Length: 135
Image (cartoon, rainbow, N blue to C red; front, side, top):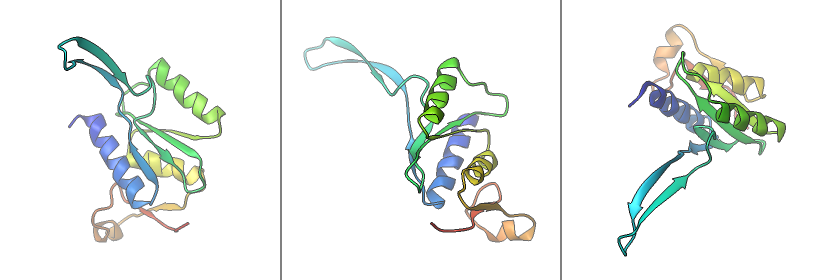
């Protein structure tokens, strides 16, 4: 798994734990041969779309672009996230689960960070975070 892939997986795990419907959104292309042997090039996903998409508990569309600490957004990703925000959706760039938690809190979703010994007791929770309220 790539470093960015690990961030995507951790963010998906947190969103699942938080009860937020979200999934990995892949984009790319593949060349294949059909039954008659002819080759075809097939694109899937939208260029620039977020790594994770879903919806918030209040119904707003969610897009989370995951990057390593040194990763940069492409121009297509910047445009996609800006269009999502303009349409009233929640667009987040997460370099860690902590970034995702902070952004969710800014959007009014009740999450809190755990510190000290209580983090150890929270098996399966990543980056010292838990959901503090149910909606």
